[in-house]
Image (cartoon, rainbow, N blue to C red; front, side):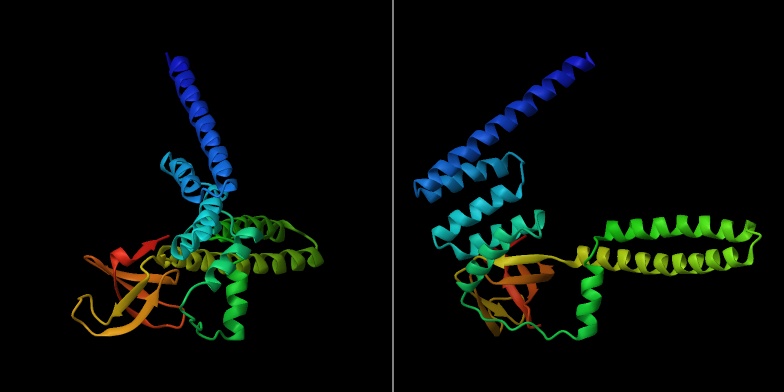
Length: 249
C-alpha cells in the first residue's frame, strides 16, 4: 500500500514538473513574440503552483520592465535576488529598473568600521556562523585533550594556543550567528507599487504628510497598525503608508 501511495505521489510530482516546464516555455515564446502580459500570465501560474525559482522571477521582472511596470519589475528582480543573491544578470537588470524610479534617496553614510563589520558578517548566513561555532567547540575539545595528555612542553604550548584561538572563533561565530539571525527576523523589505504615495506622520489619512514616495522605491517595514505600515527609507526617514500602496518581499 505504501509503495502504491509513493508511486501516486511521484506521478503527480512528475506531472507537475512537466506542466510547469511547459508553462515556462509558453511564457518564453510569448515574450519573444512581445506578448509580455501573456508571458507574465504563464509564469505566474508556475508561482501559483508553488514553484519558486530565480529564473521564473527574473523572467517575470523582465516582462514587467518591458511593459514599463517599474514597481512590479523591481519587486520580482528582488525576489530573484533572494534566491540567487550573486546573479549578475539580475543585479544588472535591477540597476536599470532602479534608474527608472522617481525617488533619488541618498543612503546614510557608513563608517569604515561598519563596512568592515558588515562585510565579515555577510560572508556567511546565520546558519553558517552557527556551524562555525559548533566546529570551533569540537576543535577546542580535541586541542584541550591533546594539551592535557601531551608530555612534550612544545606540543603543549601549540595545543594551548590552538585551544584559545578556538574559543575566540567560537565567540565570534556565536555572536555573528545571533546577530545575523536577528537581522534576518527584522529584515522586512517592501516595494512601493502605487504611482505616488503620501507618507504620513501618523497612521491616519488626516495626519500630516511627512514626504512622498513613488513606484519602485524600496522600503523597510518597521511596524504594522491595521491597514498601515510604518516604513523607513535608506536615508533614515520614517513614516506611515497605506498597506495597499506597497508589497512586501
